[in-house]
Image 1 (tube, rainbow, N blue to C red):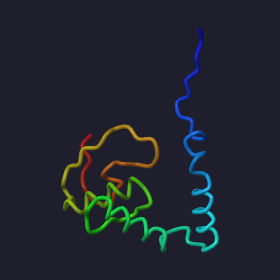
Image 2: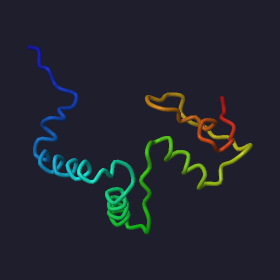
Image 3: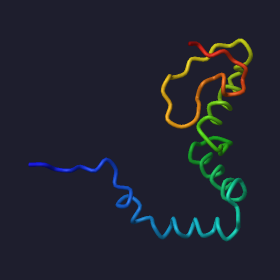
Amino acid sequence: MHIRVPFLDLNAHHAPLREEFDRAIGEVIDTGAFAGGPFVEKFENEFAAFCRCDHAIGLGSGTEALWLSLLACGVGAGDEVITGAEHVYGHGRSDHLLCSSAGVR
């Protein structure tokens, strides 16, 4: 017997939320607020409340999140940063993150 098990059925997952997604996307299109703006600010405030912290910052990518985290930790010129060798999208290497740190090879 051969049974096909789908890895992830996004259609089934999203179906109950379709109207909410359509409404939210429509609001973004109607206001032209594709980056930043009131929707990002609302998300940041709600996510900070969810995490029980004072602030949350929405970023454009995982690379930006790594870069900001390294800066917040004081990583800079001459520091060594060890990252994973594998990546799918973008570059998570420390020497690409504008911190002037030295990646360990």
